[in-house]
Image (cartoon, rainbow, N blue to C red; front, side, top):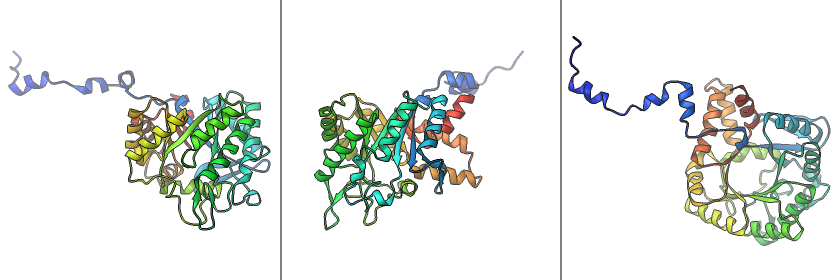
Length: 338
């Protein structure tokens, strides 16, 4: 006869066993609470002047500045992989910069040309344009400055409206104001509507923090501020409640999507925003986050593919509906193989 079970054995047999649902990949997939798909991804891309140019960004291995002809080739490939949304960032030559960023609303500007070309070639690609002055200003700030170096809010907003309207005229699907000026979402919405662009959506960089994670991105655009910092308009990393205030204001002004930037160090903010609003929430997996993973992988300290997938899954688990990430193409290739 088999031995009688002990009290401890009997108690253990009645215990809930979560491992039953972890036994194999099929069961784990069946009960997975969070799914990362290619539809969640937006690919930030850098466009530069010239032809047949693809220049790697030193501080962002695997990311490039593309001339428009090669950008179109890359976007066509992305579309076949299922990456159907791109965020455009123009690399503006120094000769076209001025103190007020007037090149930003030039109808023949680099960003506007790129939008037209992308929509002509791959009309199904969602083209999202950045609305901010820092790539266009000699001083590298996101707004107009006075003689004392103070960033002027309302004067900046007037230019941002012109910029957004010019991008809509070029054919963009969505404008993404990243400047953090007060009142700019409402002003841009009114400007778009007044010019007949009621269907152009606004993805607002609503909770954009004054973060040290942006360094490689500024290398890519050569847009680092020439003096001071951006703490008078971007948010204090210490603040969480303020993010909800910014979100509430932007939604009231007409934002269709709100964003938290950066992502990894601000997962709590993503979670709170998701719990407190009823519009889609985007998170930007920014350049510094990308470069840290790339650097550690190059040193052989981590498994890049596994870290990337875990990172993006965690951003989505925190509450992001959409993720802007420089890993978008890599993830699309990984998911295609599954």
